Image (cartoon, rainbow, N blue to C red; front, top):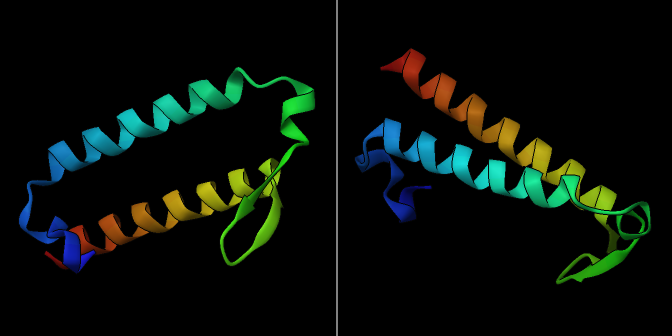
Length: 76
């Protein structure tokens, strides 16, 4: 995001931070019980959303960011 200034920061620390955050999130997801996976939460603008849908969205979101990194590296 331009407003966060990522383009002015070194890539390696940003990727390391992204990987660390994702590893933390994966740890939390792996610890969930089957009953917790079927729970829903309320997301502003979306309403009640199952955790499974949130998880799919997060995967899409990460894939989008990785594609942006690849495209930016290829253009450099």
